[in-house]
Structures are given as C-alpha cells and as structure tokens.
Length: 67
Image (tube, rainbow, N blue to C red; front, side, top):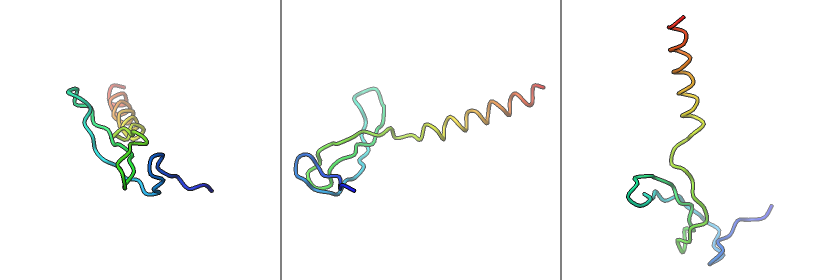
C-alpha cells in the first residue's frame, strides 16, 4: 500500500488542527502536514452520523409517547 505524503515537503506524518471559519462560527478540523503545516484536507468537527442517530432516537421516543 502506498504511503500518504505531503504534496509540499513529502513528509508522512499528519495532524488535525481545530479551525474556526471566518465570522460564521463554523468549526472544522484541518488535516495538515505535521512538518510544514500544508493543509491537505478538511473534516467537519462533529460526528454527523452519530448526531443523526441521536436525533432519530429522540424522535422515536416522542412518537412512542404520542401513541
């Protein structure tokens, strides 16, 4: 399997860095090279599938109480 490398410095270690986007207050995690800081990706700071599962469970609880 190929090893991921930074496109700028060819380093092979990466890290997540919390980042707030502008004045909108949106938070993201930047995937960046641990050596030079070049950003190679962006990840939402929330686990959306987990959050949707919690919302679904809450709605199902409400629905069962209304029956």
